[in-house]
Amino acid sequence: MRYGSRNYQEQRHRIGKLHEKARNRRKDFLHKLSCNVSRSFDAVIVEDINLQHMSQSLKLGKGISDNGFGMFRTMLAYKLNEQGKVLVKVDRFFSSSKRCCCCHFENRELRLEDRYWRCSACGTVHFRDKNACYNLLQEGDILLNRWASGDSSLILAPSGVLSEKKLHHQAHSNVGRNGE
Ligand SMILES: [Zn+2]
Image 1 (cartoon, rainbow, N blue to C red):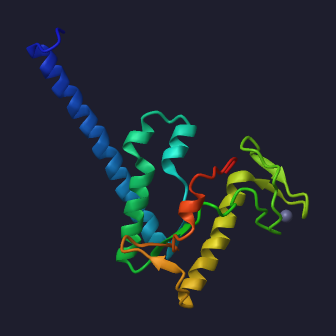
Image 2 (tube, rainbow, N blue to C red; image 1 turned 90 degrees about the vertical axis):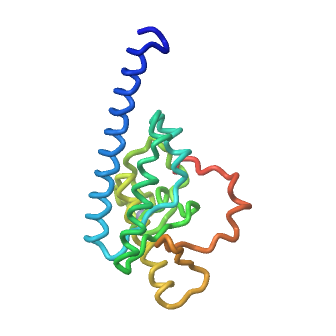
């Protein structure tokens, strides 16, 4: 097709429509998923990871531009909020991966490629991601209890996200989270 020709314009239109269809399908899926999760749980705890850094380091390519994770989280927060529930965001400096969820020993030697590891303090064998999830669950629980007892260092944003008030984050924002 010659650039700018009638055929070219028609093809461009067709491709645009396909992209729109894919976008709508993804959005629809995220709506259903977030709806489901928000109905099934009284609170959801997530790690405050930098989604942009993550998609870059995972080489997800176009994932950066459509940001499905971010969209999912936003949907989840307002859907929980509508039901009087909260999305708890755990500080990104909480070491969810390196900490043993059983005894809280911190494994400073843990590298990103270690999918499994054994805690040298209590001997528990961990699957990396599951251990991180348990740690986040424990931490989220602590935050929820603090919030319930009126701790003013926590803030519930209008978006439905409960998190620590960010006072110290500017100073830390240049520090990397290697291996997290
Ligand atoms: Zn341990």
